[in-house]
Image (tube, rainbow, N blue to C red; front, side, top):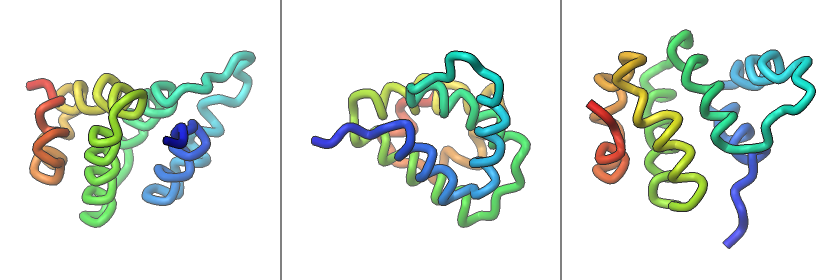
Length: 111
């Protein structure tokens, strides 16, 4: 199985939210030790998502991405669970995303 890299994650998220690429670059600019983890990207993505104004299609694509990460297991599952799904209720995104997520992804959400 091919390792899912940070570059692949950034590409996938930017394909759904093109403006995230610039947001990410601004986040890491000047950082002497930028993170190379999936967790770091998701930790930046969640605040971005709270400020974005996604279309219904973007919401569904994001939910599909999160659900696929859960299915993939390993680092992908851990990163999306701990950095996104467990915090959706705190960011008040649970109401819009819960119905769009797979049953497995919903099981990783906190209430």
